[in-house]
Length: 218
Image (cartoon, rainbow, N blue to C red; front, side):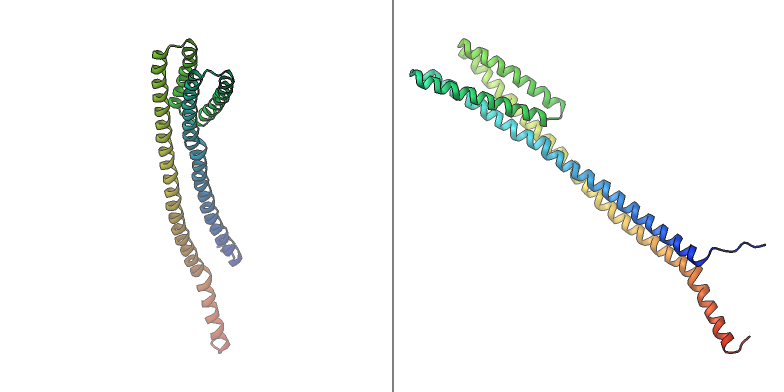
């Protein structure tokens, strides 16, 4: 016995399931691509951009430390010296905090290595400052400034790389959305043609037969 075909309701339900699957795949793909682009943008701000900001602030703090130390050596009034020492302590604390944030926001190994070198040089700078070795102090000043410049340069380079990754993710999202939309339209057209062939045409033929029977063409 020849098996009967699927009912009209089953075919319509199958078409609905197919279209729902297409829409779901398109939505999930778009969500993950857009989420990746958003995460990359957040990481760019929380990472390299914040690292650049706080590394520059730490360099400014160190410059202020140098100026405060020179002021301390130039004054003779004990009250002024005490006030300058308080400013030096405050600036040193701010320097440590800013450099710590820059270290937290610097994710690359070369950035971390530079920050550790800066910490070691600053500790050495303080020891040399206490000894009063001005020639060694000038050399350390130059080395620390060079390390800070290199750190900011690395932060900038890495921020550019993350920016390019974000732009690429956005481009992939755009192309994926266009491709998914075109594919969904093609599949929808194919499903429509399938339904027309398997449902609408037989119904039209049945309607013609009914009209002929109604006219007495048995």
